[in-house]
Figure (cartoon, rainbow, N blue to C red):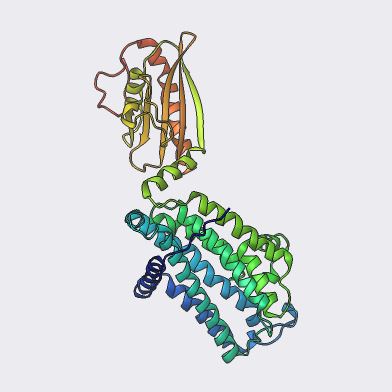
Amino acid sequence: MSIPVVTASPSRRGAYRMLVLTEFRLAWRCPIYLVPALAIPVLLLVIFGSIPSLTKPSKDFAGLSFFTVYTPTLMVLVLIFLALLNLPAQMATYREQGVLRRMSTTPVPASSLLGAQVAINVLFAVVSVALLLGVGASAFNLVLPTQFTWLVLSLALTVAAMFGIGLCIAAFAGSPRIANVIGGVLLYPLAFFSGLWGPVSVYPGVIGEIAKALPSGAGVEAIHASLGGHFPGWAALGVLAAYAVVFGAIAIRWFNWDVERSRIRRVRILALLTFTRSVMLPGNFSGEQVTLALRAGLPSRFEVEPAMRFKGRLFGLSTKPAGSDVIMVTTGTTGRGRAEVRVVRASGDTRVRIRSGGQVLYSALSVTRRVRRVLRDRADSLAGSQAPLAANPGNRKTKELP
């Protein structure tokens, strides 16, 4: 039994090389994140190396200088900039502009563009790390290891761990703005635990243990040991390998090339963070009456729409049309919260079930609480009227009901 071997055709390999070259030119022409990744670490290296007191051995760092201890942090900082800011923003831009979707119609798969982006960012990371080591060794007497095997292994696992996180951001971010926000939120804690504001070795107790459990802190620890010519340690290498495997698998599983599919998948995940509450109203009421009560009681920033307009879909989950006793309440100004309001008959009374969720948790809670408050405040008026609640449904300000 023969096993077919799939190989890339010469034309496809040539197309991939053209993609890599094109991505390199684009990154060089618009170095938004390359300047911080390449310039800031080298600038910090020159500043700290130019201060004589920081290049002298110190007892606080086991006979090493602050400059030697801080160099691994600058290497990891390069990877943080490239993995969390440059790569996700670029891939989110391509997805939003439809570049990936158009590439799917060509003989070259869209994954080739992702591979080209990863290759370019890894190339810049290698250049920046080599520049740090070269400048440090030639200008400030940084001692380089005689055996580079452990250093290469530590750098490779740190690159895999950090770029795994970056690919996860690229998988879930539907636009460059979202990618930048997520990357910016992760940037500061990872930079802090890498020792950017002080060597990791002097972090006290719990802070130091947290740093060792994060990819940035584990990467600094492994690179620091490698620069000293020692084995990085199984703990640091294990942490880096775990982050690389877990986040790499998540990125492969959830990565979407189309912006619509990416948005649907994102809201499905957000739909897991929902809140369900119920309100009992005395009497037999229809969905239309509850709709009018909400329109009269909710502020103007809220919009009450029939469920059929949304085709019965709450956060993109359900595909069945909603019944006549279901209405929708959305936040019209922010668009960050949505609540499904379902009217159900229960032993002669009316139960209103409120299920809400949103991109921000406080928005979902705010919607749920506001809807419950309005219905509770108007329960007596509903019970007393047993009739359509508002003659003018367009009036959305709070008013007394007949």
